[in-house]
Length: 76
Image 1 (cartoon, rainbow, N blue to C red):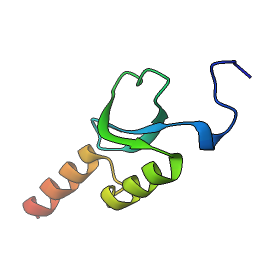
Image 2 (image 1 turned 90 degrees about the horizontal axis):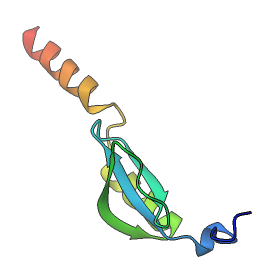
Image 3 (image 1 turned 45 degrees about the horizontal axis):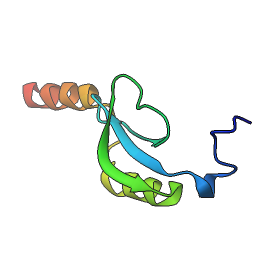
């Protein structure tokens, strides 16, 4: 184990991240957020971050698919 890595999940602070497709994930705050993702402003223990995602991510489809399906239903 890397000495800069906390011993277990309880010791890790996470941040909630989202990508351009409005897909959510969590990321350890001690690491740089990967390209294509941005922080949404929620940080804390893993369970709290996952609870936030469960509340806000109500449609699991990628944003591009939702837009495509919405446009197709309006054309029908």
